[in-house]
Image (tube, rainbow, N blue to C red):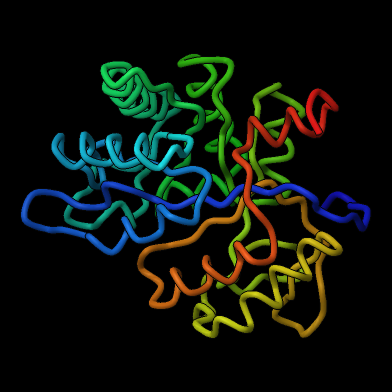
Length: 263
């Protein structure tokens, strides 16, 4: 794993998912998060998101003035995109182009632009663990637009995508996930549901670019965005408290700030 320097994080994005529903299966709790995030990932119809849900999500995002991204996944509504699927590089490209293209066209009808792409569920986990799989997604994202930002789990794979493929990326962390010593997510551990603990983790991340690991220590990571899930029972409370610690900025605006163009 790459060696990272201890550094203070001055700007960071907060993101959440929208349109995580289909037909009669609703998820109205997700809209509560919109008051606190700076970017949203809208499901594209594969793992979730029917046309009306996508339309409503875009409308809400515009009303809340948040950045919009495509939330891509496997074509697996019954399994909510959480079952791994083995695809060739050609198939991965087609799956990504299909979903991102649909959301981009939908957004244009609202005079909006898609700024990033974030994988869902099993696709997200596979991208974090398999560089070739992640690279195939990134190449397809770049074909859609060279300006799109590819959201992925912080770690070696997303860093390699950025450096080797020259793709704009956002390295993502969670406040409610347990991390391994190498900075990867421990998927066998239960999520944290204590708000105070999550905020303590946020402060540690911002102060020193560190996450607490499952061996009782701290691991250095690179972090551009934090994901908040509507499925977590205390996400709204955590987000409300997190906004008292730092005001989130969308990735592209954060990058402009770091370039020195604005203060």
